[in-house]
Image (tube, rainbow, N blue to C red; front, top):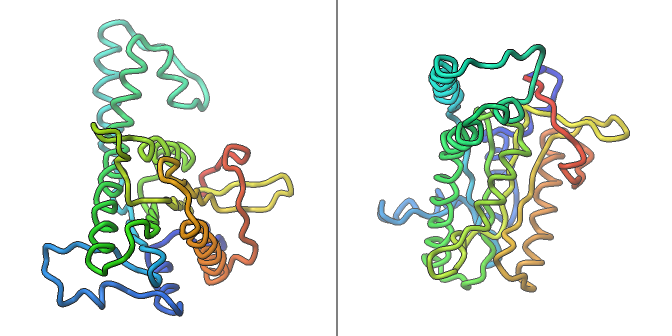
Length: 254
């Protein structure tokens, strides 16, 4: 990453910020006497919010590239590969292949598996926290995913996957992620430029639309917006705005 670019999305920055924030409880300290079987979230704010932090530190890029190489070798032997000149979007390029859709789906599964895993674990940890501390069943669960390494795809593609994952249901029709009300997905290996040519960091806030809004959830969302604006200021970003990511395509900076 460029030395003069704010390193917003790091686990270290997040933990330093929270450690100096009033009104938030670090559950790592509180739960030292808990049994190993009780896996709770990272932070809570009163009886309002449970916050779980997950960091993507492993990059499945080599696994993905290895699979692409093996599959393209098979295709080349069977039917010959088309020749591409210049830079092309991988997804668009694979669509002209006979099994292009199948190849893309397999790649997505390889790449997104770790995101599904952190979401599944976070859902359980938030529920365990609510039960362990006797909080109300509709306490707001907020998952923060900081992507430090898995940057093969642009952040809006990963955010789109998170959105689709939140819409999944169990066999009985109940939400798969019944304890995650919202996910913040942050990745500062990309930047976006708005129409005023301001450099912005793509932070995607994805609500679980399967969960009903309540007065408590509205209050929790107000608290989290304040939380993130303060975090931005903490890492040296004075202007924190919510933008529609579809209007601002991201560009890789590292």
